[in-house]
Every structure is written in C-alpha cells, then in structure tokens.
Image 1 (cartoon, one colour):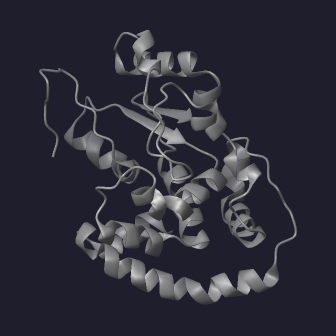
Image 2 (image 1 turned 90 degrees about the vertical axis):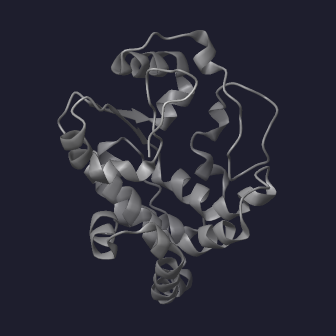
Length: 227
C-alpha cells in the first residue's frame, strides 16, 4: 500500500519486484514514473549471497525467519536468472522508465542523481548526496555519510568462487554484454558446478516453502522471474 507521509506531494515506492509489473502499473497509474537500477550481476550475486548476514551487521531487528529465508533464497542459478529476467523486463520503450547503472551512480553521483531528479520533475539539491552508508551485506553499517564508490565492482576483490562466476556469466552473458559488463571467462571448478546443480532443486524447494506467503500466484511469479 502506498501512503503519503510528512505532507509530501510525491510518493516513492521502493520494491525491486515492480520491474516485472511495469505494464500493469502503468495501466492503473498513467502518471507513474520508474527508476530501474542496473548493477553488475556478479555484485548482485555477492550481495544476495551475504544478505543473510545483515542481522549481524547493523540490522538487529531483522527476524530470524527473514535471515534464514535470505540464506535459503541464494543459489547462483536462481540469482543469475532473476537478474536476467529483471533486465529483460526493464526493456520497455517508454519515457516513464529511466534505467540507471549503479556503477555510474557511484562514479558520477551528482550527474546521475541530477538525471533522476529531472526524470521525476523535482529540483536537484546537494543534500541528496548526503545519505547514510547502511544496508550493505558486505560490511557493518557505518556512521559515515555520502556515496561510497568502493561498492562498485566489489566482486573483483573476492566473494564468489569460480563456479558462481561461471553460472552468472553463462546465464547473463547477453545482457551483460549489452550493458558493457566485461566477462571474466575464467576456468571454473567443475566439481563445484556439479555440486550447485545437485543443490539447485533442494534450494528451489526450500525457497518456495519460505516464500509462499509472499506470492499470490506461484506459477505467474516463477514464469516472470525464472524464465
């Protein structure tokens, strides 16, 4: 549900899954504007792999169930397919959809946030760059503020094994190329690849169990996100 708070005239609803329902949202709200963030799938994979650790990195109020659900949800095939499907879903020729690359935001925050402000019809202010550095799955929340450029291309410093990189680049190759993400193309550990293949049906089954309460239509959800 959307709600107006603090007497603001603009409503911002941050739900990544909305990218799969852009057409439906536009039909019900012709004035809706979308900002779709695109990030290197390898960095996305690291983030999802470590997401379960958020409870111990500053978000102590996260329920134990959500911590377990985050761990269950991670599998390199699942995350790669989700990224691929979300990129495909965002390929909509509409002035109401603005695609923003995460890496460009970190490198040129003033320019990119200025573009986002223009897209939304609001005035850019310097204070928009003064954001808290929290919510990372790779480190503890910081008291610092601002745009942390070190979060760009973090996969290069480790966090994914050769099999995870192989799955990611094999599944996402086409969309990675279109978005100018250079492929690593290193030789994978084939024993690890076999392990992930064997683990995949188990993780899918557990993920369904832990996410049933979040899905109104299981078949439609799977078709949109894991095609």
